Image (cartoon, rainbow, N blue to C red):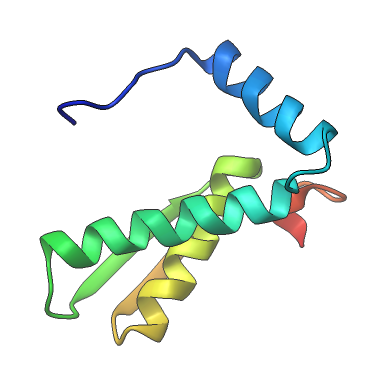
Length: 94
């Protein structure tokens, strides 16, 4: 991660909240972009489709995992998803 900027959890929450509050983006859009980015990095590391197990919690990070799992599956990977159901009303539930 050379050259990458690192922020704290609190800073990231503030950044996301400001972006969503300004109307520039939505929580669902951020989640979709994050999940696709994760899947993209996995596919760069392992270019040939294989098998993946994705663990997803009930919050937004779990939603990122569901998006990543779907993207990998669409790319020909065999994917198993293990985790909790998203919290009702959360972006992950969408």
